[in-house]
Length: 113
Length: 114
Image 1 (cartoon, rainbow over the protein chains, first blue to last red):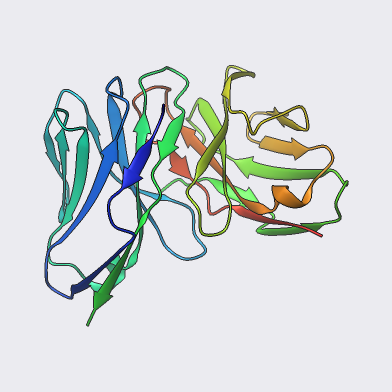
Image 2 (image 1 turned 180 degrees about the vertical axis):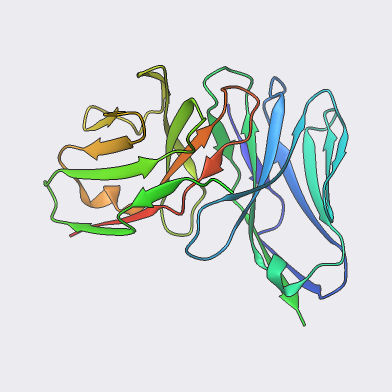
């Protein structure tokens, strides 16, 4: 069935450290993945995306890695800052043209000063 | 930077009443979506809309739900007869095209059914 899930519900890191948030997906036909950040009282904010023909993509302070063999996605945040504290969701578009996104449960990132 | 805007930010409605949630997608986007998020849970897909028709809907999107693009800028979600379990955050999103394109979300409408 369709399932996108996160390994850990809460991640606590020290300011300045790197953070890694993981996500597993179950649909091997999925060809597009997005990471969203959600702050309290706000909607999901786009961070970075990756297509299935890539295994790595970098943005500003963020890197997404895709391992299609084990159906695993990760988000790496370099030099984590207090403003990075939020819930992070991975989402999967299973390849259809309708754009339907399937979201994971979310990981709360807490950054300690 | 263009953004998706939603109104109202909070809607309180009696059970059984009709409610309309409003969204203004990003102006050059062609695909529109509604999602909901029950408190503390993940975001769930409701419906996608393109070219003035529904392109996909989830099991949640039953006959009590409808969507409309009444003019060139607004996109609405109507719940005809609300139930207690409709209480949630409702997010509107839009994307430039369908398929593998990032969707940009509004800040949501908190719907509380009494």
